Image (cartoon, rainbow, N blue to C red; front, side):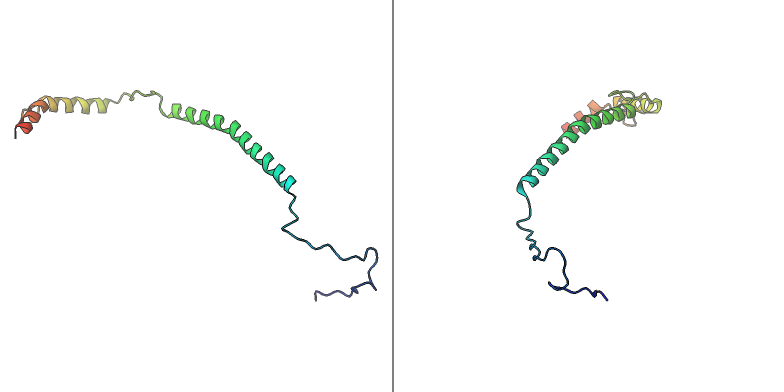
Length: 111
């Protein structure tokens, strides 16, 4: 059982016998202390961001450079060059209709 054999009240109590102070959660918050904690926490968050954002951007930029060794220039791909050359020849008139792209556009504009 949860009940003990200890007597309650003034007959069995030793030491201070005053009633305990009621806990009132609405009035127990110390506004000055809470404001200080909030301010220190906000400063700590912004300080950490001030330190971490430049580190993050440097790491991100290093990763970008690592991913693109040629910068903004496309890497040389032999197959891509061959396909582009074939397509340009096709557009210049080496196709079944023997028409360049300019001639095909003029024909479409006339119709």
